[in-house]
Image (cartoon, rainbow over all chains, first blue to last red; front, side):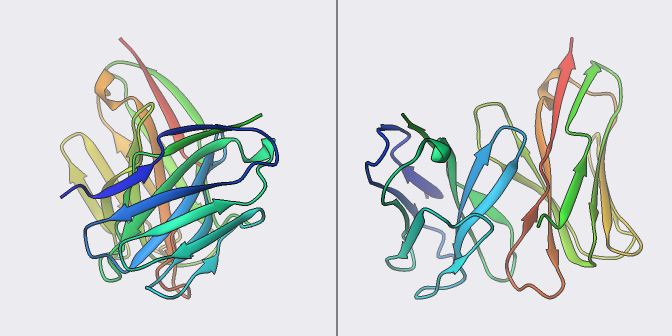
Amino acid sequence: NAGVTQTPKFQVLKTGQSMTLQCAQDMNHNSMYWYRQDPGMGLRLIYYSASEGTTDKGEVPNGYNVSRLNKREFSLRLESAAPSQTSVYFCASSDSRQETQYFGPGTRLLVL
Amino acid sequence: GQQVMQIPQYQHVQEGEDFTTYCNSSTTLSNIQWYKQRPGGHPVFLIQLVKSGEVKKQKRLTFQFGEAKKNSSLHITATQTTDVGTYFCAGRPGSTLGRLYFGRGTQLTVWP
């Protein structure tokens, strides 16, 4: 039981490059989330998926797209990376009833 | 805009001193959760409070939920170096199913 896994752990991109951050959970949770964390800003929600087949924008969705591939997997795509997207990205999942969120280890992204 | 405010942003204490972080919402919350993030780590769930006026304890940690369900606090008695990290509150407004709003966190440093 791995919980929430994220790949890659670290990534360096050049401005304009694209990439996809992968997230998977093995807890049979319905809801999944993508956050970014910047110093002094806490956790800001980018997108979330309340259930398989649905996605909704969070506080800071611009520049990102998401795909809820199946119940286990929720990916985050940066189509054209910008330096402002340098951040630590966390994926999380939760059971609809308990609402406790379980976080993955994070992806540290640097955009040059 | 941010719906959950958390203060202070930083707190430095000597080992053995007490520590408190406060969380306030402009709207009534259906519940509030607290998370801890160790340096370089990911947020980890600590506790959830649901009832008005609820108080819960975990060893040296005391969590309170206000009578109006708009504020909460986390108090640590006699801090230890193992308490170092960032503490986040996260609340769910009564009208928003499934989504949590995180405070910006309080970063605690403990001097030995």
